[in-house]
Structures are given as C-alpha cells and as structure tokens.
Length: 180
Image (cartoon, rainbow, N blue to C red):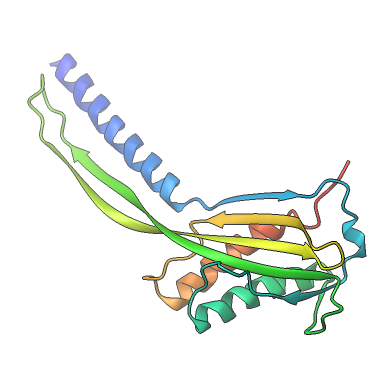
C-alpha cells in the first residue's frame, strides 16, 4: 500500500514539475544585447528611425506600437527623437515570428504501470524583435539587441502592447551599456 501511494505522489509531483517547467519556459521573455567595444555612448543624444533593408516588418499598427514602446524607453534615457538626418544615432528594427511546439501532459500514475495519462502538443508563435542602433558618422552598428517571445500576431492588442512594453523595458535596461 505504501509503495503504491509513494509512486502515486511521485507521479503527480513529476507531472506538476513538467507543467511548471513548460509554462515557465514558454512565458519567459529572453533578451540579449551586444555593443561595439570602445564606443562612447555619451555622445548620443538624438536618434532617428530608419528602415532596415531586407528586414521583416509588421503591419502599420504594430509598427507604430513598436516604435512607441522604444521611443518611451529611449526618452526615459534622456534621448530625443528627431526626423533630421543630423541625428546622433540611427535606430531600426526587424521582426521574426517562428513556431515552437508546446506539450501539455497529465497522468494519474497509480500502481505498477497501471496509471492513465495523456500528452498533447500544439504549435505556438514565438515573436522576436531585433533592435539595432547605428552611428551615422562611421556607418557602423554600435548596439544590437533582441527580445524573444515579444510579439504574438494572434493575441489581442492590449496584451501585445503590455508584452511589448515589458520586453522593451527589459531589453533597453542595458542601454547605454556599462563599459569597463
């Protein structure tokens, strides 16, 4: 009797752990950034939006939302947006929406292999946004960052905006980068 109860509790704990790991993995936004060593970021005060040729871009509404979210973060860093070609920094972005398998499982795990269980899979969209900053004088990329699990074209607009703002805050937390 104790062996069966122990196996049952172990099975339940295993299923719960798998579900928590799956949920945590799917919900977490991942951000990464890199920058050109030796760049003096203190000289950048103004920026201009530019289109990255060949990059994938969303519809006009999502384009405006992305720019609004980035503008808000850069403004909080003391930067000013301009339409002038004399901007200190050019900023552009591109997006990608990939698909990933999601597994959902449950089981009763009673007895010696006599339990019941099931596992189902579904495909979810994982949106990545890549943000690049260029020095117009040197025509070089000086900062790049990407945020995954940021865009979901099938989600509602309010949820997308909250997710996007959270991702851009997390990504641009490291701008300007701290240099040694």
